[in-house]
Amino acid sequence: MTYPPPGAARARYLADSISTASPARLLVMLYDRLVQDIAQGEQAIRDGNRLLAGERLMHAQDIISELLATLDLTAWDGAENVAALYRWMLSELVQANIKQDAGKAASTLELANELRDAWREAAMAVGSA
Image (cartoon, rainbow, N blue to C red; front, side, top):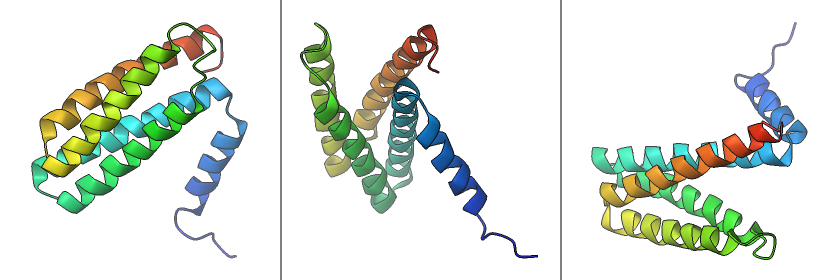
């Protein structure tokens, strides 16, 4: 009997979860990853691990850039406010990375948690969580 390589089952499960998730659930999953990246980046700064901090914070920036690029500013009145929040988060994460400032990462993490929780509640309200 041949067994799959370590991690293959987890990768398959993740791929299946993503391919079958509703758009609202995908957004919550993206926010979950954003929160994870910022938290890991903040901790890496505190630990003095500049390389890991850079990797995590840059990945968080990529996620926010994607959220900003796909935000339909004409879809609702509050969209421009969300875009402004995304731009602020991007700026803070860049500064956190350049200056190795855990405080900037922490403030961005706090906002990311709040946004994730709001989107999660919205997804649950429409039955897409």
